[in-house]
Image 1 (cartoon, each protein chain N blue to C red):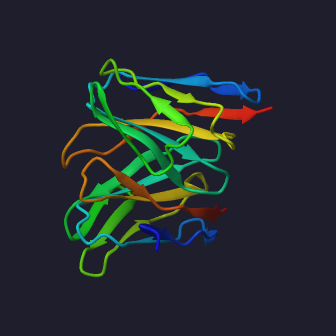
Image 2 (image 1 turned 120 degrees about the vertical axis):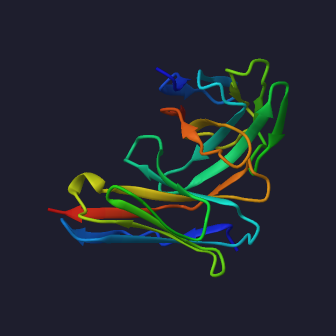
Image 3 (image 1 turned 90 degrees about the vertical axis):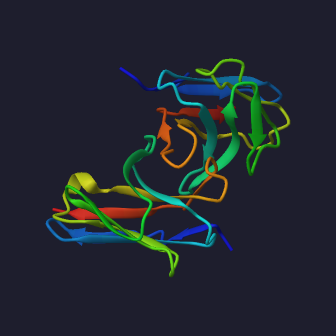
Length: 111
Length: 113
């Protein structure tokens, strides 16, 4: 079993819709959770991080964490074609400085 | 401007050669990391370091070596023992402890000829 699982996609949504990206993790001791966006051929850039159960909003992005169910999600409201990228979920295990990355979900936002 | 730099951007290696990838950060971060990414896949941890003069193996350390002589620098050597080194190599850095989101450099694309 992988430490962090994501649906590889592609997930296709029309422009202006809400995109919902999901991630599950196996280590119940995980403390912090991150979403990165990666454009083709580029390095990942941090979008959101969340430490506590519940929702955290930043502009058009909302991260949701449910530790009991061991999943974290990212909602992108009013999706734009420029949001088309691969989204990587990362989880920090019991060793704070070792991250586990999912394989990413490819998002396509159609104009 | 604070950030992470990696060089070179593209690197070509002949069979049997060792090559060294550079990573420098001026974010004053204690922790640094090296990842490998293959097409269509996620990131796999090669090595990481939480403090100067100390580093730990990640999940795929075989065929790679690192050093951490300065806080700002964490070079990665891809040795001839690494049988399939063609990949995108990413360096990252972070603070230590709970507030430790990782920030990435632009990456080095290594191709074996």
